Figure (cartoon, rainbow, N blue to C red):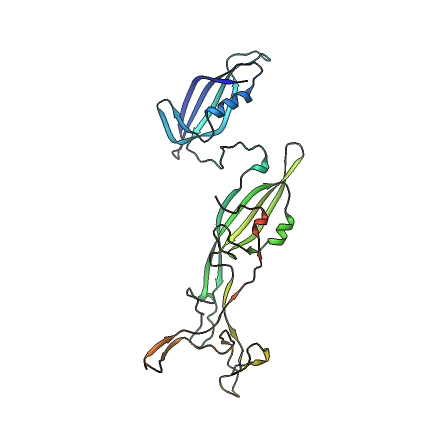
Length: 317
């Protein structure tokens, strides 16, 4: 039950319009038992010419041409139908063209197929509340700047992961859709990866062996999906009042008994925030720039979840 390489029968070379090189080789193999078939020959071929091996033949060497999984095995010479065969012609190929996946291991079970990973960018326009340094976007009169002038194009990386599964995790889809990561994932800190979509279809392999093809989509934002919003309100904290008591706030008026002057920016205590700008320092009597103490709230809308429960890889190779 062995096959032996008898020698090289033929060879050819092609180069396509992209410059990729392809070598096609024809070999003569012989088996020592007439009961041996192509599978016995295949084992010998795999040992001599492993998939992924570089092209080396006598004085020829192309370190960027790799052995492909493509292979043909057929009887060598003239044989009558039904006559035992112990001589075989094997044709294999080396090429510089990239392969769609690692082929060093033969995949027979579809559930053992590796992840298929691809990426893209999602582009959206969003009205910004703060500038690049996190400062509130206000006019000099403290009114927020609104409209197209403060719309910014936001681009988030998008990642798609496809794989085969013996079961359909519908419960995980329902639990985790639109949630963000609760721990570091793929190098992104918590709340920086969002699970945005899931697609699936049932497939069949062999005789009534059903499995599922699943595709997930994720968006990443290194600055987190939490939003920065300046604190603004119609009410301000009464002087000396307890900020924990909702009744301690009153409608802001420019002066007592004057018309209402809100909404206005607020501090983290709910009192009127000071406007940023240059003012005279009472000690040095020089102009000093004072930043606004307007409180910037971090709003967390998306819930967290353990996205690894979806069956995705913990690292991207």
